[in-house]
Length: 516
Ligand SMILES: [Zn+2]
Ligand SMILES: [Zn+2]
Image (cartoon, rainbow, N blue to C red; front, side, top):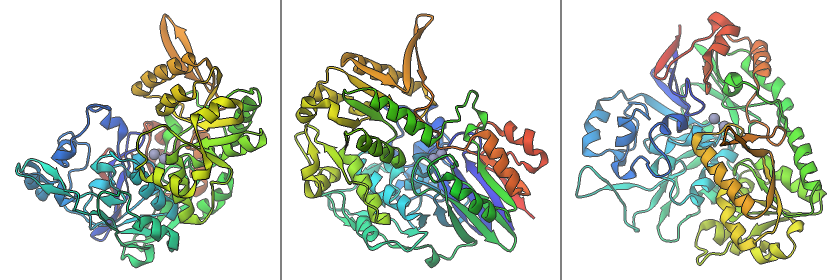
């Protein structure tokens, strides 16, 4: 019998943890962090405690109550109950793409569970973990820093510097390239030994389904959908997707053909619940951003999500066309170099690297730049001399570097998500203070005063969503015509039921649907 259990992400945007079982064993589709539920309890300064293993997350019901987690994360007061939980026979996690709301809790899972993903996603997992020095146990998706029992049995202690970090067993959807093996084997820390895991191909695994993957257009490269086939039924999982990016429409027909025989479609619905949604495409974004850069001869700052490599390439093109040079951070360089290890495509041509003032260059990203791109380094003083020659890829967290560049004016383009959390609103107010301090104008985001209170709004045209819009999604589902639709990654189940009626199974977190 085939069954689908949505452990998390059924009624929120992200946090997908979907278990699909066939005859007693199964696979997880993603094992992400549920930010909306985390943010009900935590913020930047109040986090779950790594020293307590998975204790805090279990107590707050932020991860499923299953016996599938790393032994070294079980303290004396969690071990007994975790051992009493159900232990599904998880053969693998199939990762749709490398956004944290799909990967962010993979680090907690038992080391014996292999992870499957596209080569690009595997490269991003490793590179992202390498450059995030203090990301926490949950994010240990590519390799694990084992915890050791301390004198206090309630504490998962940090291992000493002699204990190696241990790579997970990772499987590509295509045969991993030699350079991807090298990336996975590379020790990110000088101070600690590292033992790489096995890097293989999906075909090496004995899974309870025949698995096919379909490249998807999303706001991160390497995204895929999965078709899981068995004699008892076929499941199709879209992950996050859209068709309005550069390569979007090419994927549509192939995807529909692959999904058409599915009995069950597990589909994202991020934008179904959004009112006043702007139908902006990537080419609209290009036009708007290009016009903005054309309109000024001053310093330009482009702010977009760090992992939106398609957007980065768009700004590289705009820089070329406007006679400027694109300047990226060392972390961006590290991620771009990792992508090249996966698919052999060089994304670094004509890019310069911001040489931040710091007393140590010991990070793996800084070491890579020193080794291979030292001739591309650009100091803040060089930018100050000719600010109009550059487009700087900076986010809010890079604003401190403006204190070294000391611009007198400039243009900041916000080309990122239009949905803000409360925390982001607060950060945006601070962002505006930074920009005003340096007399920098903005595009893509506005600050106004409404009834004496500051209000931040986005300006349409400077960002295209990574997700399919409601009307297009409706057509897509119509073309596939599945027997059953399970919505996930959405806050609007009613959007689905009002259109597809009895075909829709609105599961709550932890509920299952079985195909008989
Ligand atoms: Zn997502
Ligand atoms: Zn995503």
